[in-house]
Image 1 (tube, rainbow, N blue to C red):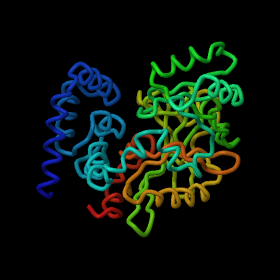
Image 2 (spheres, one colour):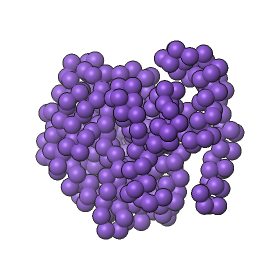
Image 3 (cartoon, rainbow, N blue to C red):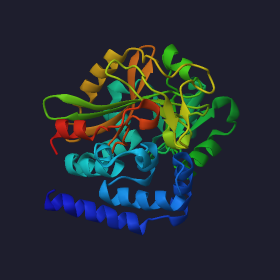
Image 4 (spheres, helix red, strand yellow):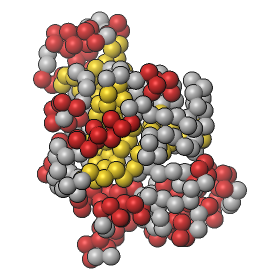
Length: 338
């Protein structure tokens, strides 16, 4: 490991120690201990050991069943800290704002977003009223939020005073209003209350766009499909088929969707070849940011990009639901060369 890499890792560990929430960690160790049928203290000690040795986040330990993996298997898993290091190393910070701010992102990727939108900071109450009433319902978003925080659906029928509505949005920093994206009928069959998106993690080497990970994110009765807000995900094969059950942030697994009854195992994402061609195109738009996690919706007319994550989250197959006990780190290393 280079001196720069060691410095990043040491700095990360120091920051983790400062931000350590002992109560949350103790609770997490207890939850994992029940699933693993191991004492909480044993899990806690192993969790801390793995955090330092394999550079994983605490949630990573639960999501990828580290308690049940051998050392050689643990070394194959990508992690959120490693992903953060890659983003810092590969992506030019001068261009990060084009991804971090959803309003700026919509401007930069206007031909690809597939929806109308308005920034209320640049519109008066009358313009907002015209937009919302024409749409019928909109998604209100905090432009610089992560993980679905600050996102909510607003119905035109429930708004009577648009001046007050604008002030409410400004106070909550929900500066961005977007048209609801119509999703492909097959995607809606999974869960109709949210747009069920694909997270495609890509790396552009200056010539070729490489796909590092393919995940299907699914809502669970709420308005968003985010893992941190009750949603679930499963990994896709190269043809866009979900081969294994999905799992959520509470470590629950689902072979069949609990709300719609649609089978998750065996689900074929529609227009998947078109999605991959679409990602190959958008990943070249800002070459200064080559490592991106793209959230893609599949509409009746084809793919549309929801956002590009400058510091992508990590998505991998869960060993306990798939039997696959190796992660994606070797693939990342092969493609990126670190």
